Amino acid sequence: MPRLPSRLWLMAAALPVGVALVVMALAAPRPARHAEADWEAGRALFIRNCVTCHGPDGRGDTVEGKRLAIVDLTARVPKRSDDDLRNTIQNGAMGMRGYDFTESEMTRLLGFLRTMGDIGAGYAVFAQNCLTCHGPDGKAQTTKGLANKAADLTMAIPRRTDAQLRTVIESGKELMPAWKALLSEKQRAQVVRYIKTLPPPRTPPQ
Ligand code: HEC
Ligand code: HEC
Image (cartoon, rainbow, N blue to C red; front, side):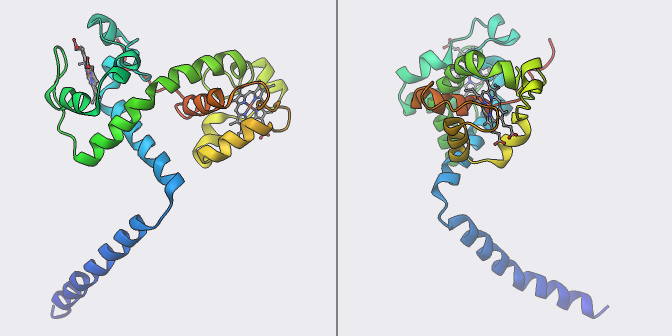
């Protein structure tokens, strides 16, 4: 089999080129998408590691959270510095183990923790203004949702940027009214944070 080794050499030689291409692709400027991707990555880390106790919006409204009489992170986090939070997450606390995150994971997680209150606030906006059509799970299977041919948000959202979501909510679409005059800019931003969490992550059965 004289050809096999040479092919391996070829692959070995191509590897740095591949790595260089990936590095170049990662370094390419795409600021808006990048901030969103960081937020999504932070949220994914939170859901994977913290949601059982702290709940999807940090308020600890889960079986485990209630058992531990856990702190409401949305109230606690704004009072803590990044260094404090980093310390707790790395070293753990009463009833919470420590986590060994990389520096970039920690940065994304902290970024998510700092905006987590928006999810709860966004839910209040959603419940009051959007739920009748888009339904509690975003799938628009409510009577009013079906009558108005509302969008299944769980299908639509992964294909949109935050900016596109803000625009469609601001301007309205088909039978959906424009929310620009009805909701403040802050409320619109908060509701975008919330709908991006649809469908709500399931907490493990009790
Ligand atoms: C097994 C349940 C559990 C898990 C999982 C868990 N925590 Fe905790 N966490 C707690 C408890 C209990 C406290 C309250 C400790 C205290 O202050 O008395 C706490 C407190 C905190 C605090 C507040 C500390 C302060 O300033 O008072 C932060 C921040 C925090 N957790 C973040 C996280 C993050 C981020 C994750 C995931 C990486 C996580 N926790 C996973 C149980 C948990
Ligand atoms: C009267 C029913 C109704 C209400 C109330 C409503 N929507 Fe909609 N929504 C719709 C309809 C209809 C569409 C357009 C469906 C389509 O694209 O054909 C839509 C589309 C959307 C889309 C765009 C989906 C896509 O394809 O990009 C978003 C995002 C959205 N709605 C969010 C909201 C938010 C946030 C609220 C509350 C502030 C809300 N909607 C309230 C009916 C409604």
